[in-house]
Amino acid sequence: MIAPPGNSSPVASPFEAVLLEPLVIPGMQVEAGDPVALLYSPEYETARAEVESQRIMAEHMDHLLERALELRELGLRSAQEADEAEHDSKSAHLNLAASQRRLSAVRSAGGAGRFKLVAPASGTVASVSVAAGEAVGMSEPFLSIFDGKRYWLDVALPERVANTFSIGSSVSLPGSAGKGTVVAIDPTVDARLQSVRIKIELPTSSSWRLGQLVNLSLDTAEQETNLVIPARAIVRINGTDCVFIDTGEGFRRVEVSIITRSRDDAVLNAGVSPGDQVAVSGLAALKNLAEGV
Image (cartoon, rainbow, N blue to C red; front, side, top):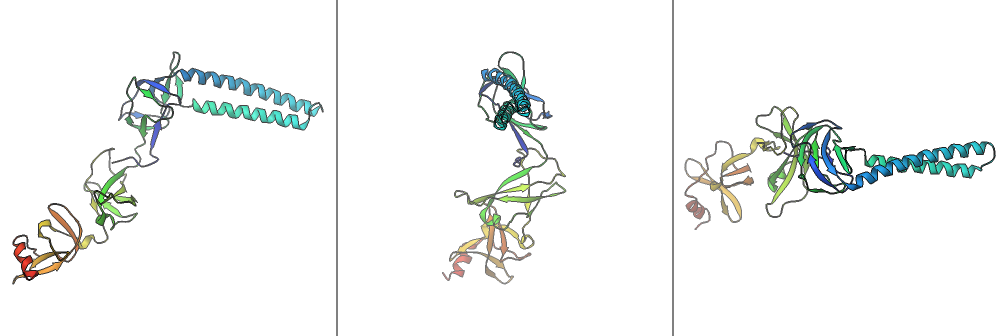
């Protein structure tokens, strides 16, 4: 179980800092604006001083602009000089806004260089990756807040099975009233496992948790004709997968199409019908007869 993209809000420090104390732990509910971590950085005091300096500069530029406009009306300043004063005023306000945004998620904690970071959004604390006393990199997320509105399953399927699905395919979830929906299919195949990862959006009618394991049933278009037989019933003859079906008077060799198989079971979508009895013993002799040995 994972959080979909866009449903988690990372928390990062605007400065190189040291985490003095995490104020939350995974699983806690927070509201936007709640303090979540106490940190220390000497850059914090410098940033606060820069904001104050830029505020004073912006006010000064506003005064100069106002004076330039008055003098232009009196014919004592050119239009170009007034335009330059307006440009300087706007630049000063842009610099001030940029510095203020840097401190938008920061609150003073008392004491030089100490500050608190606040939650950017409401939700559940999903993770805290840094411990007290450890360094926190500038703009490197170390805490995550999950809004809990949507959940995805991340599933690895055998390539043959994955090929029977498309975006929008439904997935049954035992114990849940709703169905999941396939929202993403990895275009690459894991070379070692020959598997493909798919993402499944879970219904909001049930309660879920990040990291939870979920039983699921994949609803393919061929599901009504798919049959599960013992894997040991399958034999390989001339490069083709086959089974031997009991006809009552003997055994008939039938070629089968395997969707996927495990050590114990194999899922077929062709070759065997409901009610057919397949041989699971004496297969070596049956294979020899089929090959004319």
